[in-house]
Structures are given as structure tokens and as C-alpha cells.
Image (cartoon, rainbow, N blue to C red; front, top):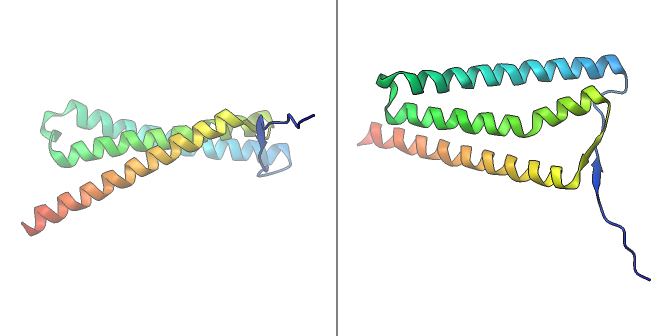
Length: 126
């Protein structure tokens, strides 16, 4: 007889044990998330709507804002939901998807920042 156990979910450590601190944690994360959404949405809207901003620098800023929205939207909603529902589990597939998307968005952000730095170097030195 073989062992047929498998991992279906991960258990996370809680930030706080009391309900009031979990609510505070939720509201702080919600404020950070809404500020990031608002700031990045304003950058995207300004660059997309104003034709004078259709230059390479603003193109990079637009893409950087999109990548930032993707990376923050990968982790914070699940964290806020876990804090509000007083649960500490995340499914194996959900965890794998979060890790894959977070690593993808962060690595794409680093690549874009490297390209932006090289673009500024070429603009200044050449």
C-alpha cells in the first residue's frame, strides 16, 4: 500500500490574533491598494489621453504603471480577503499562480527599469 497524501493548501501565519488588529490590517492594506490603483490609473489615463505625452519616456512610464498594477493586484486582494474572513489558508494552485505572476511582473519591471536606465544613458552620453 502506497502513501496517497497530497498538498491541497498552505497555512499562513496570521499578522494578529485579535479581530480588531485584523480589521486594522485590512483597512491599512485597502488604503495602500487604493492609493496604488489611483496613482497608477492617473498616470495611465494622462499618458493615454494627452498626445503630447506620446514620447518614449512616457511610454515606459505607462508600461511601468501597468506592471505595478499587476504586481500589487497579485498579492494584496487575497491578503485582504484572508484578513477580513479570518482564514489563514491559500490553495496550492492559488499559491503557485500568485508566485508565478508576482515573479513575472517583478522581473518584467526590473527589465523595463534596466531599459529605461539604458535609454537615459544613451540620451545623456550620445
